[in-house]
Image (cartoon, rainbow, N blue to C red; front, side):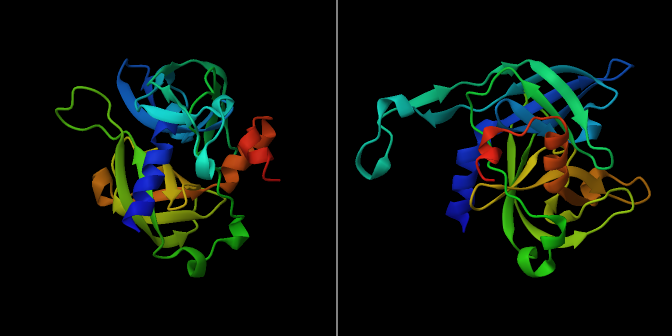
Length: 240
């Protein structure tokens, strides 16, 4: 299991980008986002709504197959293209879901890794299919004393599936520590596909974020926003 989760991390880390925002008082915050293909990035709505996006950028070196160089034995690519960390410019968006904590933007770079979309309609999500499944969460929670923004990965398992009073789709409760900065990041299954979007720490009485339950929204509302704004990437269209 560890190797599968490790491979999922290696194959998708290049699809992550941090989002730096500035509020009206001039204070900066960092959130997370991820690439679904064709320059389309997903984040949590509260990461960017009513805020100025000052920077969106990737942090990880990744490698993509160079299909123009052909393939060798067992279908192994003859050459790979190195993708360096890069700053992105937003071309369209943000666009928001009418009920759930989802935002999407389209950026000017698409020659980079993307996370394949796993799809489960809300009615198909059940304890039987998901409870105790293992996954990884990726994002950019601030690390004290770190001199830059660093991608963080953590192993998690699905502890519960809930419906909330403020959303219209199921949410996965994950067994790992909630941290500020994870918001907008992905939950990735062992096969490398998207399970959900990290949206919040569920806490009571204004307690610390780390004392709450880390919650991830199912992917159905992400698809709804993409469809409403004609932003469904070819990687998703090809599955239809």
